[in-house]
Image (cartoon, rainbow, N blue to C red):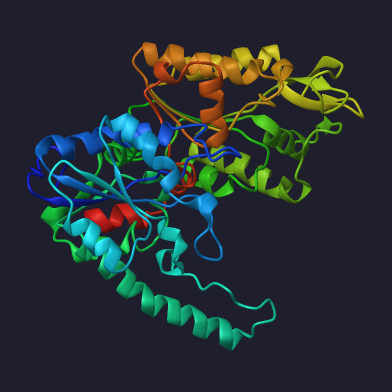
Length: 420
């Protein structure tokens, strides 16, 4: 497989699919440029070689075509600052104006195309269907957009000599610019960007080639949203730590009294099945034993330490208790490969962040002792960033949904398109 380091971009035009889906405030100013900065090594490598760059990305979720608030023109000035050079922009991603702008592109220059999702063909989903559209109408609309998607994809591919996918955050989507476009390039002319390569390598260190013991920490509120992840991990890990709100579904499944704690009653049998499966496979399933319970869902609530199986009526568990912190910490610190997805409590409230902070610190300690640690999933990333520990773990994924699908064991279209 071709790699960025082994390719010389001199005189080449590279279509680089990035994930510049950054948050904007009401004045359309960027509030977090993490995703843009993450792509800089790839962009700078191409420019240093003497190549030129055609940047493709989406921004937001436009539903009816072009909308000013979703225009990529709002990120051009900041990208210019990050790269230290002027960046060009064309207010479309299809048509003669785009072809002309690309034709004028000189080595060392950067051109940003307009939001790819302004066209339904990017996602391959029909738009504008009436709510009462018949099944036949929906099928016809879907067929039509799929047909036109071929032309859209071919146009993008014909703009460049080389295709570089550096958008791991969209790698789970079989969209025109994230997967389908790769078919128009030979194996030696398509490759991962540095960010994409690092994401894939990090996931595979955990899921395919881990150093044991392997520990997965799965938190968050709902068992139902993590069931596929848990089932896939059971055959790969030595320790499975369950925390956050979902732990109370397990506590109730074992006959515990959980007060007003979060619980999915329709998942009680599933929780029991997971516990039985872990035992059958010899996996150490680690569940919290105690919690910080509150009398309301508020940072100012009254609190008490309770056993997870004996929470008074009217009270709810919102964070790990001291015994749980110690128990979970010991497991994490003895691990050589660690995956963390989902917080241990309501970390957004300062009075209920201690459990998540303790898990983060245990991961940092294990990493310092030689473990490989991967943090992924929105809330886990928010946790590690809030606690100022992101630079003390092995890797913090930018992937979100893409990472979760990797952990679920799915093959991502954006990865398959490059690897073949």
